[in-house]
Length: 224
Image 1 (cartoon, helix red, strand yellow):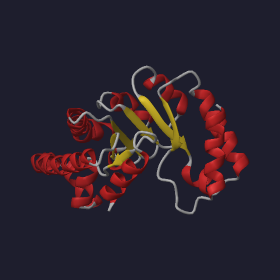
Image 2 (cartoon, rainbow, N blue to C red):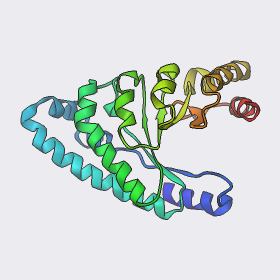
Image 3 (spheres, rainbow, N blue to C red):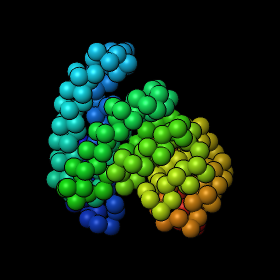
Image 4 (cartoon, rainbow, N blue to C red):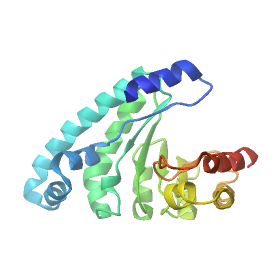
């Protein structure tokens, strides 16, 4: 259904609207779903299990790349993955560097072979791995509202596009249009003069978000 929806969007809008194919999950996050949170985190902490850990990551990499390839066939302009299970809110940065980052690099390489930009999203506060994420080969990083935007601007400027990072729940879903306009202006001010910035929520926008709240964010963007 997702693939068909992406194809319909591309047919309807052509190149007028930039279509992003989201291919959750990245290999580490997919392996976490396969093994269960408890089982996977136990595995990555036990050196005796690391051979099996990498075998599962290789399997999940192939599954991820298959989905990337399908999204490319829909005509999407770019593709993306989520790897939130590998973020500092859940695991230590060394775990990210050893078990997530190498496979993110390979997904980025495969996307580029298909001629598509690639984005990775990680929920929570990612300050501790920003420098590492820059080395993933991603064309853009979509980061959550807990990540410090000043540090992000410094780490990514002239290197990678930043996507984000308005709080999707407390601000977009539950806030007033006035609050959203203020938060959006503040964020746009941080990235003013930086062409590598795409305004967005920091994570998935709740379905209950009032349309007028989204319009408030877009209205500020159009005037920025």
